Length: 216
Image (tube, rainbow, N blue to C red; front, side, top):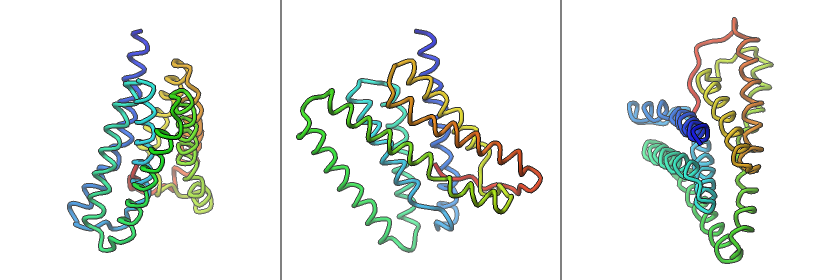
């Protein structure tokens, strides 16, 4: 039981550290009152991912998932609000937010009304959340190709890479401990991509320029 408590604490701590990497972008937006080159989609997709896992944790009664994703969703919503406030082109992000809210409502109606059996609902939701998480972990692969071509890791954040590795590893161990494949499987790509990034930092260490932290 003590080991499970420590593992749960590690999942919460490492994941929130990864989510809080977006605070650097938040400071930039507030101080400069502009969004500069900050990307909007990572905030939105991470928020949707958090909300999906929050519902999964609620259905399963998993306090660790509930805590992590409640705080994560709150942080991402804060980043989204700041982006919309300071961007000069508000139409596109507002449209994406409204579209996402519509998808969430339809998803809730589907899971709540069309799937009354909680077990079936939990399995389908877990499968959806797993697929979404895997796609998020694999999305930076295109950037890795550019890094190899330019032989520069200036677009990567070393602290975020290490935090992602620790976060993914802790969730894999947590999923194994809870015998939950929906938690275990989607976090393996996070370990793999983080190790690839660490190799790139080592491979191109002499060519590396000061990094700019990436958002969550």
